[in-house]
Length: 155
Image 1 (cartoon, rainbow, N blue to C red):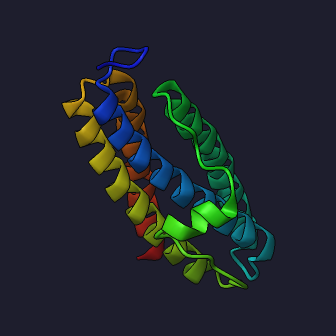
Image 2: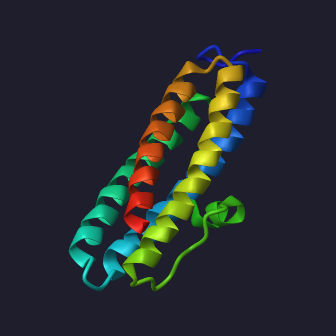
């Protein structure tokens, strides 16, 4: 049986589970970035304050896109922090003021997200779900470049 966009319902349900997991992780990532943006201190303040803002603005767009993809697949996106906290691998970060530590947290969080995106990409490809494949491909490309830049910053 297929859903309204022609994806096998069982495969779509599997994707919805993984996309909700990605959504939860992006929500925690977003909140971590907000905290880093607000609390960063030191000689790298101006540079990192702007970078964290750029990253959280991008993350909130992705949160919306992921939720809308879940809806397109005929699922219900999680929308409470209690749901997010039950499944997220990204943990809340608190009171980080050091720039290097903040960038390390972002790298760790991005590494978690990209692993999840690759799994979803594979599942979506096997389900002939070009919409999700396209979304994950774009995210992976962007994340790879950002990880390269952040790693260069840390060296």
